[in-house]
Length: 133
Image (spheres, rainbow, N blue to C red):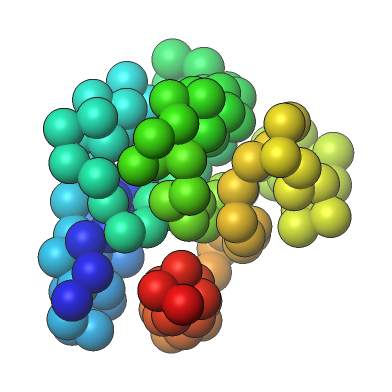
């Protein structure tokens, strides 16, 4: 059973993702601000983070948080991060998996919203399996 931290300001979406991941046997915690997500990360290391990009306080807060997670180092340095976002709908810049970069976009995978929750659960399962190896 893995511990998954969801950091997304959309409470309804976070609840839906939590329900699906809990049905798969995972423990889930949702934080609705980037600062709350960082605080939670520092309190308890998750096995995986599902991270949104845009937050009301900052449209790029998820990018910043991903970098902070990697900069903290230690146990958080290798936590898989699944960036799950609708940033391309608001700012059609074409962000995607090809932009994953250890410095600029240090995430493990990237999925566009809206997302089929079965696909999301499958991607989480694969990322957790890879991280456990």
